[in-house]
Image (cartoon, rainbow, N blue to C red; front, side):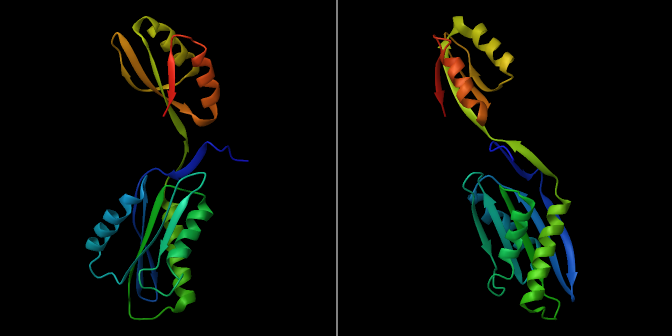
Length: 202
């Protein structure tokens, strides 16, 4: 069973994967995203890049444990575009992703079945082209302590191979660590046992 503190997403954007179906052209795009607010600017950018497009259909998913998603048919028959695209996001097991399929009509109607197949296939080809990576869910811990404790803290970080996100080292120091989610309880407990160090989870 897959550990709960990892997830799969795409490493970089994928552009203009082309599928031709009865003279219609379907262009597939994929974008790694962190927030729903990124979706609209990307769609507007693609509409400008494809001024002759009849439909700009898409699906996105965000989140790991309780993911949210949206699928949009952009004027195609109900559930003939957005959901087939979303089905491929599920099939590849990826999240934090937006997939857009742009259709330029070629003069021949495909019917609902033909549309479902074309949108699904374009999304599939786009994801097959993408570099899919596994990422670790990390949580941040803030430590505050007096400068005299700096060696103790740094030894602990090195021993546990923890990532230092930021540090402010004055008479009173503050460092932010990135800790793998499943290690969080243990790391926090061990740090709290180092008395003169205050630990806050972000």
